[in-house]
Length: 612
Image 1 (tube, rainbow, N blue to C red):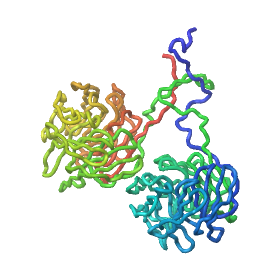
Image 2: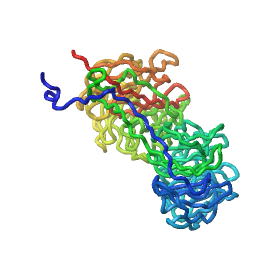
Image 3: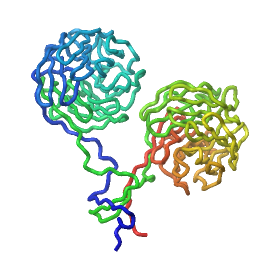
Image 4: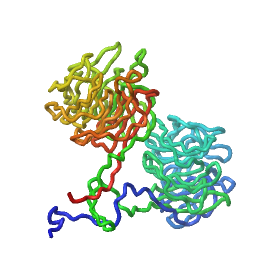
């Protein structure tokens, strides 16, 4: 009998168990050498094998500084000003200590050169219990307690502190990490204990996903997109909980061997250090070292083949669209409908234009950017409008057509460079309710109303629009599916709605299989061979058309109904340049309050291969 490897040129991997969707982050804490001075509310910097711990409370406030070499602590020169609840930044040989309580609250800043501390310029706002992160020459001091909670944030440039944008929620006893341009702050108390998390982009703070366990007096080790938060106090107990942040959400991964709060931190999210602290038994000198545990299971990869030796079956890992579902995300900032969206992933999208009220119609130029967990308002369009089309990503986009005041269709085209909109050459045919797909430099615009229905199709070459072959059926309000200028779908639309679908091959449109449910003002994403449409309106209905929650997937030959949206609506935006139907993003839209975001995810599944 011929071998599979002889026929196909490769062998099939043999596994004793099926592959899994996600092994999850895991890790463990183990004992290290004790500090020489037991204390709590101290600060720290460095790595797991070269750490610096300084300040704290014994219970008197001290300036003691100790160095860790991976196994033991050595006392060295003290801070000039003994204090606890202070902020820290930098490294083992180049550290920065700032603020704290002596008492009272202190503004003192000191630098460490590897052997001694030197006083430099003070904080503008004396405080303690603040978050601190960065380097010795570029640091952030965020929020804290100054006779009351303050939202004040200061940036250090190596010689002086400057006030910058405040945090959204003033609090103390937080954890944090990062740089002066990308940071994170989490937990604390307001005075209510909170799990709130905020991220910093160098100019503003944005609220994002909370810790799973709300607590204060915790610490962190890592960077903006990969950090662990550990220890702390809830409303009822001191805890040893450790949670891992992946840039969008927190996952519980491990606990301290000895629960405690107000520890000193050092290291990274995969190799961290927690030392000293306090708990129900008192002040301790304990040091624990954290290490990520490598996964032992094989993670699913779409298209992989393997032989399960336990069940004696051949299997293939495929996308399971039948198990796909929608989950709620953070609301947009400006409630609206009739806007449009761009984006090539569920973690990066742009919402542009729309209108906030229909009687009278108030058009908006607002633009918002999505980072996978929250929306941030950025610079507006030059021309306020709704029922426009857009193409590209959240850093390089094109917005074209739409309805502007006074009620009029427009041909205006604007380009987005990641920070501002610039007017470029207009469409040849002014229109609204048009479809659009493609990259920033090679977009496709089709259909719409002028106000009469049109079949006009135009291509964009990065500088101008050119008319090409028309749709077979003139219409507007269709869903757009496609990621390139040479392969697109115009789906359903019109009013009253139709179920016609046309496919573009780069030169002409061809009618193909119809959708199951005719609708208008739906949205889409994916490619012309693997796509999704979702939402929309169905006429007649109330008022005056029923909102739809229906989702349908396209496999290149047929449409199949999938799981519904949580909130039925139309007139929304989508990250329409996502190239597959395993991910999707739908935002804003009709059905008050017009602020919803939903994320579509279809999992992978292991399918047994049988003889046919």
